[in-house]
Structure formats: structure tokens, C-alpha cells
Length: 442
Ligand code: SF4
Ligand code: SF4
Image (tube, rainbow, N blue to C red):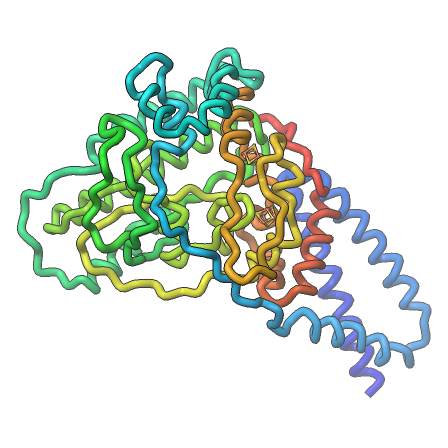
């Protein structure tokens, strides 16, 4: 009996040691210097504990075994993931109120005057960001000739795709079953580079009231498609670790392009088969992508207002195709544990250089409103530095790479509030409450 207990105890110590060594290896591969150093300290401390245990009498081991058994009883059970139902907005959102749209207005033009006649309350906040150099500007404080021009080239490539987003239909419907098409689309999108894909019915609050960008500016949005295909593409962990510098801007542009390209291919494919379809790509949206993606089961919108996906957190861009093809709907409950984690975490809010992210709680309210950031102060910072910052996305504990070690923590977060508290403390210890941006060459 004593031998079995000793064997089990040694096995548990071996597992803990193995996890710590794996953590060090992952940290090195991820170029997380602080986590790497803390991992080494943790291994040294663990070795001292093992050495001390070795001099204890063997008869004590069965009692010490109670510790890991007790830990399993805390880590594994699922509890405390209360449903949080955010209020669904009664009014649809006007894309002309989005910062990119407001940024495109030129002083003295009819568009400019009309907008501020309609929304005089936005004028003073917009004067503040207009006084700054602007996104991708040469005068911006973080201007870098190479990164900024690379990003500009990528955005210009996205612009070349714009005419392909919406095309008229010239063929009759094919004979392939809707079910077969849905399966094919799912597989193909992943092969094209999507991380995850889902389908949803389009609801009224998904659709903008008016177009806010491009030649159709000011037109009422007419979107008769009933279904949407939503998918995500990954934003590079390494690029985002350089926040808020140029690599973030480059990566944003690149993933807008990748998402746009996949959306255009899918929309054209469906049109070729006789189904009216439209790709929603950067600067040419008719839908609010994060809400569509959440309803398609791809994640949960968190404190920073971005979609938090199961394996990459907010470190994604979203692409959407709306279509008349009838699609099997993903009826997935949002992951309420993500909302509960956001409730205690607030790391994005602590690190936001413009203090644009709210710190309020929502889980105790009956019909809470979704967290929304102060888009004016966030955008003003972008116009100052010239990039799209990305600090909130980079520091989020959900944004760590999609690998065994981080997925183990993500799994724990889903189980219960004790794990969530522990995961947050570990994240703060290994990566810092205010993580440093990467100093590595990009
Ligand atoms: S940083 Fe924390 S609070 Fe912010 S979105 Fe991520 S998990 Fe939520
Ligand atoms: S992008 Fe930067 S400024 Fe904007 S909310 Fe995130 S951290 Fe704050």
C-alpha cells in the first residue's frame, strides 16, 4: 500500500515537473522573456521542494497525496458559469457613426457639414482626433517608413478587391444540395486559411442602417440575404507583441486582406452556383461583423468589445459573407465563462494607453448592456501614434498562442471561478500585469 502511494506521489511530482519544463520550452519558442525567466525560477523552487520531500519519512506520502487529489476536486468540476444575457439593442447602428467613417469626412465638404448637422454631439470629440497627425501619417509619433508603407501597400491591395465584393448573378441555381454546399464551404474556408467558421441567420440588429464608407456613403443599407457565413483568421502573436508599433499595423492590414480574399472567393463561388451572395470586407461592410460572428458560434464579445474566440481570444480578424443559400445554423450558447473572466481580469483596461476600456461589472445586472469602449479616445490615440495600437488585444490572457499549455489554462478557465482567479494570478505572475512590448527584431 505504502509502495503504491509512494509511486503515485512520485508520478504526480513528475507530472508537475514536466508541465513546468514544457512551460519553459513554450515560453522560449514564444519569445516571452519574462515568462521564460519566471519558469526557470519556478523549476528551481520546485526542485528545492522535491529535495525537501525526499528527506521526509515515506509514511507521510499517502497524506501528501491528498493535496493533488484535493486540487483535482477544485480544478475539474464545472460550476459558477451563470448565464449572462446582454440586452439586444432596439435600434440598428448607423455605419456613419463608426470612427473610420467620421475620419473620412473632409472639412468644408457637403458630407462633412451634413454629418455634423445630424450628429452635432460628435463634433468636439472629432475635432480632437483631427488635430492629430492621423492613421499611417508621416508625422505620427511611431512613424516607420518601412512598416507604414508595407501596411499602406496591403490596404491598397484590399481596395483592389472592393469591386468583387458585390457582383450580379448570371446563372441559375445548381443541383448540389444545400447540405453538401455547407460542408464544402466549411472545409474549403479552413483550407484557404480560416481559423474557424460558422453560420447564422441574419438579424435586424446585425445590419447597419446606412453605409458609412466608400462610394455608397449615406445610402440606406439594403441587404435581403437571410444567412451569413462568418469566419476568423489569426493575427500573428509575434506581430501583436510589438504593440503599438508598426508591425501591428502591418498585421492588421494583412489579416484584413486575408479575410477579404477568403470572403470574396466564397461569395463568388456561391454566385457561380446561382446564389446571390455578398462579401463583407474591410471598408465595405453592411453588417457588424463581431455580432454576426458571435451569433455564428465563433466566440463571445468581451470587455474590449472584440470577439473572444476559444483558442486565440481576440487575436483574430473576422470575415463575413451574406447569402441567400439556406445554411444549417450553429445554435451554440455563448461561452459565459469568458464574460466571467473579463469581469475579474480587466487587463486590457489597465493597459489601454488612452483609458478607453470600461472597468464596470455586468454579471450582477439583470439585463446588462454589452461592454463598449470609448471609440473616440481610442481612435485619437491611433491618430497620434499612426498605428491601430492593438495593446488590448496583445495583453489579453486569451491571446496566448494556440498550443497545449495555453489550451490547458483556457480549459481550466471554462470550468469554474476558482480556476479563473488562479489563471489570472498565474498570467499576471508569468507575463506581468503590464506586459512589456517586444523588443525583438521584426
Ligand atoms: S484582457 Fe481580460 S478583461 Fe480584457 S478582454 Fe481579455 S480577458 Fe477580458
Ligand atoms: S486599441 Fe489601444 S487605445 Fe484602443 S482600446 Fe485597445 S489598448 Fe486602448
